[in-house]
Image 1 (cartoon, one colour):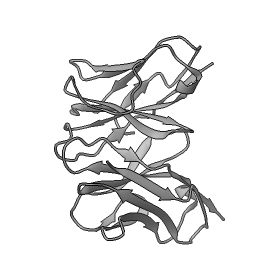
Image 2 (cartoon, rainbow over the protein chains, first blue to last red):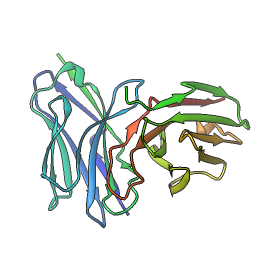
Image 3 (cartoon, rainbow over the protein chains, first blue to last red):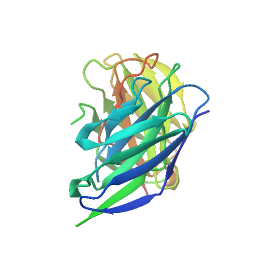
Length: 114
Length: 115
């Protein structure tokens, strides 16, 4: 079975500050891992994905994430927050073997204040 | 714009009724996935179709059913609706059926309100 835990349902940062959103996963098989962003009243957009290539993954809008097998983590970071980054962020896992339904975490709402 | 379209955007109905949500995948994508997003359950996988065949099933209630048509569009049918079925229903599509990972592209969702 697979699961995802996102630590912190709400994170608030100042504009220009580091963004760190935490994600831990559980998987009995090698996982594929993803971060999606959801802006208000919109669908989900893929930020980045880990599919067993490089452990440091760069995504869109300046985000990156590092896969750490020993810590079963896939935390999302951005060096400098922008007001436009305010949204809800979802970490998700799927199996690298067979069907690729996504198992999502509960989400983290990021607020960016001036 | 992901290229995945969903209709209608909003749906308001009464308990006990039946509704149909429609999804058109991106051009060339063979797989369609349905997800439910609610405040208490979060984002949950419901069901996947690949090229017209059911491929995987998640936490989908027996009152719910889906199908994928020869033109690859999909419909999610929800019947005997209850208040707890109020949620945002997303459709996603990908190129293949999951034997190798392909990115899932999400539609804008259908917001269902059951009164």
